[in-house]
Length: 338
Image (tube, rainbow, N blue to C red):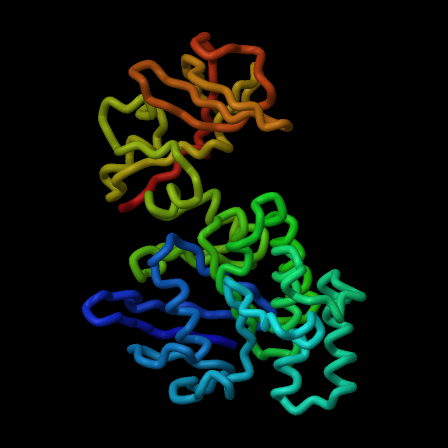
């Protein structure tokens, strides 16, 4: 339903987007994931009609959007700072877009009450928005953006100002509400955990370009290059080298001839079990550090020669400095390009 073809953009001499190609299917949530300054918010503003000077095209349901002002696109936009009106009550904020669309007072009241119930704020209609918590303000802003039944919902870092303890739960709530409303959405975030929780597909961006575009599980298990792997928090990335301890893996040995520059040892393929998966290679190592996380431990171990490996494991009895044995599966070796 949404097609972004060859979109490029610059602020003066600073290039913000480089030939971006993306699509969005009906009922899908697409996350634009990347560091600050990578171009994800600029792309969102172009789709919204808030940024009009760009190369390429953006079309919706087969119609080119160029020249159509933002207020005529029928899209909903949820800003990072929520942009709530402090002089209005909760219900008045939610009904604001409805009034501008010509809904009657009764329709505004009924729709606002229904939306507040859906986002978990039933009975809060008359509250002062200044008295709300960050999580409650986020829900009011979401309800307001949903009010006029947008053809496309766009969310720019909607959990950026939310306390970390609430973020995971609110991400799940956001996805459920968007799906319940039957909406298509573009969701901007710099947090990969948030992107996994909310999205159907993720486009990882860096320096104005899409580095990889995939479903969350595929993205995590098979990052395309070193930037994507590192941005997803995968740390076991090593240059291709003849003296690497991973030369015993056939895929690693072939990497140079296939044009790969580095290899990821995926943490999901590293085990401390006495009975490892079939075909796993055994490595002697030294335990460097263990951080208890409740249901598991974050582990750092060093192979002979000092090569570090980071992975998660069940609670350990071994102490830092002790010798351990670990096992790495063939599937753990993921080859990366620059």
